[in-house]
Amino acid sequence: LIPYCTSDSWSGTRSSPSDMFTFMGAEIILQTIKDLVPLGLDNASSLLLAGSSAGGTGVMLNLDHVHNLIHHELGFKHIAIHGVSDSGWFLDRAPYSQVGLPPVDGVKKGMELWKARMPKNCAAKYPHEPWRCYFGYRLYPTLT
Image (tube, rainbow, N blue to C red; front, side, top):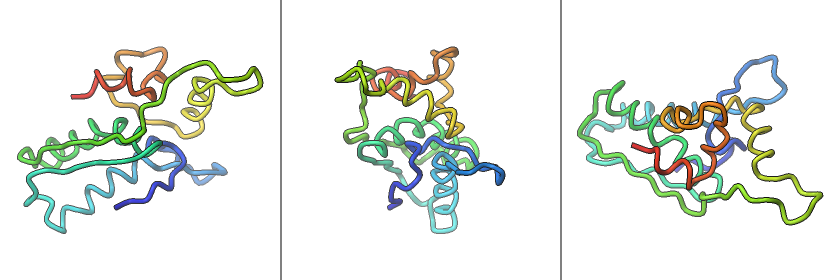
């Protein structure tokens, strides 16, 4: 169990010591998987990533990266990779009031701040608008 603590929907890669903040969610996910290797990950038949709210979005954003790590980099092709996104399916709708920040604008600002890592298939589908990958109904069809 990894408590959600990165404030970047598990998508950040910002680590520069000169930055005021670091956002390492995407790196934490991959390093955690690597940390499971000496604990017997190669004996597993499946791996389940699960998260709620922003953590659920993080599951979808990282599922393909985790699949690539386990199957290709580590060579554990026998492990089935699954994900559960509980309440992580956000919509890019207009704000309720004119003073509110639209979700799309918040995601765009966040992606820049976090140095967000996007799933390759989704980023390829939206090369000029990668922010679309934060919204489940756009991201889900691109997952492998």
